[in-house]
Image 1 (cartoon, helix red, strand yellow):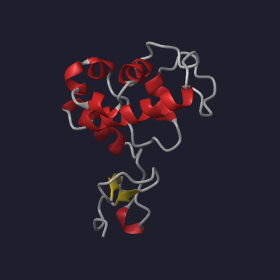
Image 2 (spheres, rainbow, N blue to C red):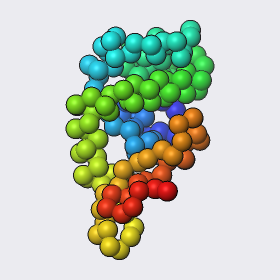
Image 3 (cartoon, rainbow, N blue to C red):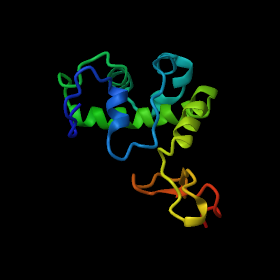
Image 4 (tube, rainbow, N blue to C red):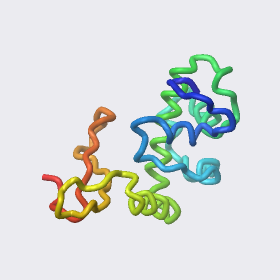
Length: 146
């Protein structure tokens, strides 16, 4: 688990990934959800040849420092986790987890004075894949994004 992580002893891959700068919008997906093949249906087609290796990396079944093509495999595992996360957050457990993050203000607070630091939620402005920093924050009590 390179990419600038320090002292990750005892930390799972999912914990490491969620703690990376820029991944504040992710929550930790339950291991049982990731292990359930039904929840992964159709994702294998996005990762021809290395789906199982990416899944093993996410589930800590392999040591990431010992694997070949570490950077490429880690990037693929990050994409896979993002797809799994997108499915997870629309389940009841996922919605509960994201609600807790929202209520805790983990996505940020509205900077407008009359919003009284209302928590905000992340919103994506376009459907096609965009660069990582293309998330906006929808204002909770103010008008929606234009």
